Image (cartoon, rainbow, N blue to C red; front, side, top):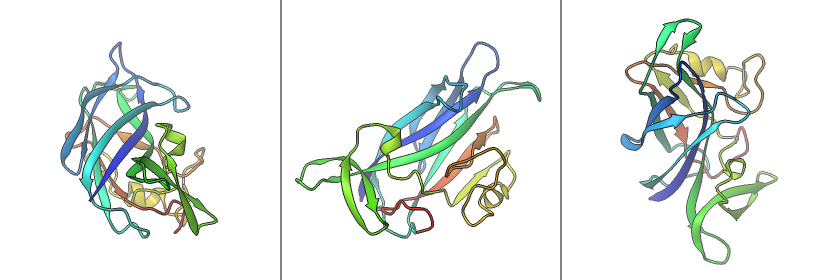
Length: 194
């Protein structure tokens, strides 16, 4: 079993004076309750952070995964132009383990040329978390098309969306009853396509 830190980068479509509120579960356990998503800017997102213990050990091929559910808890819909939503732009994690000197902490795995890796300190900086190039294997929700994620990854794992770049397709969290469930592989290897 392994312990992880997770970070979700997200922002809102704001309606009125109240920020969007989200509840997050990880493998069925509630980890964040009614947390505010204050950002309205994709380039300066709100970071939702938590630790989950006792999850499956990561592996190189991503055959083990975690289900992360994000639910908008204060939905407000007036019309198509006035609709409170949350958008997820990235989901990353670091793993608790030992570094080269034997110290126990959360670390991210940094691969060199896709082969050798080093274990680096987790500085709580989202840019240094290890899964930036690991994409979810499934995204489901009661208000998104069942082919949403398949279509997003249709181009061999590259992002198939005009105007977006990088390694993660924006995931909408609408005000439905079930929210959105993201199935995230738990991998050591962090280079795309491996």
